[in-house]
Length: 83
Image (cartoon, rainbow, N blue to C red; front, side, top):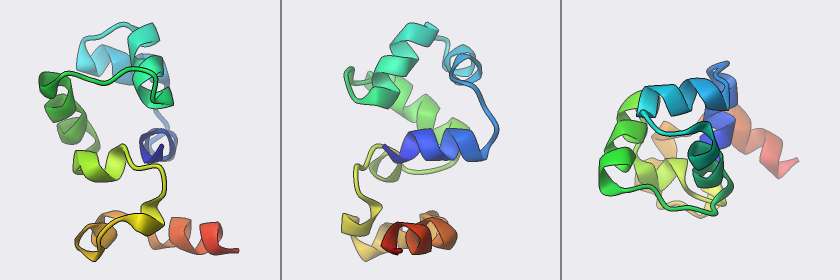
């Protein structure tokens, strides 16, 4: 998921994000891996923390996002994926 890429770009550990969201690291890892779904409250916290809409953060393939979301995605990431 794109959320992992953005976390790494920010230099954050899973532990750091979990602390900011006030959830366990194990639960956050499950969210990032796509095994657990965050509550609505946690989705809002995640959007605020990453400053990105959840549709972008939780997508599997950013190339399939509607054009309206493209400005939120790092152009370098898109170029790397096409190579």
